[in-house]
Image (cartoon, rainbow, N blue to C red; front, side, top):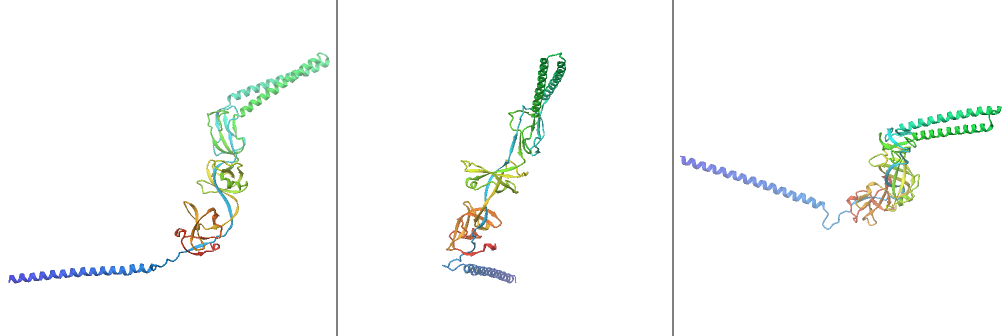
Length: 393
């Protein structure tokens, strides 16, 4: 009985094992079928789609379509750009004009506006004050002597009529009176000179303007060799001393307008050329154009600025900004020639305005210029040009 039971159990276990093995084989086969189907679909649709989208072997790719513009020539303002240094139009250096001494007070700071004759600094004058008092006393003595001599002359004239003195005595008293009056004039002149010298101890502004620099402090001893103590911009007027090339300077005349933009500022100021340098630097081949500017706190002497000087009108092609490209070699455009091939053309740009960029050199206005997408085409490439009317842009 036990033997039969063991045999039956072994048969049932073997059947279970066989059934599990068949199931695993079926699962593996199913997975393999699915993988084969996926690979087949990829080969059929993926590569087939690429193959369908590619041109047939031996066929030619279609030439790209590009928009072109024929700019023609139109009047544009001709400007010359330059850089230069801001400065006072008329700078007045102020120093010691008298004998000098110790500075007692300084009354102004850089940035202050002063009137003509305003006191900038005061020099100590105790000694000069005593000298003035002494000279004033001498004037009093001379005036007293003159009055005494005049009175004696009057008495002498009365006595000569009565015969008590001679005419010679009257003449001597007249000479004495005249000498006394002369001594009065000398004393007064000496006093006036001393007072003038004392007055020169006040350092004054020679004209109205803006104080630019101050190089003196109270307690400092100054004299004729002390150099410049203050610098004043006459009337506060400023200018830009623009450096221009010899060729640009040749066509420039006083009175033309200019726009000045200080470095680091977004503001621009309008001025005009008031002087053109009569000489050219032989080393740099440049000259100076001085552009007058009204006072503004943003215009600081010593700073640099960029200027665009309007020198007149010229006829030149004008292109949209998208048509002008640049690289290390400079500005250039792509043009389409008669064979519809792309060619690179170097250009020199001028003023940038609302209508576009003026082309000063490189185009005559009849070329077909690629309007945009210049970065996606190459010189020598054949294209299909589609002309765009510039008037519609």
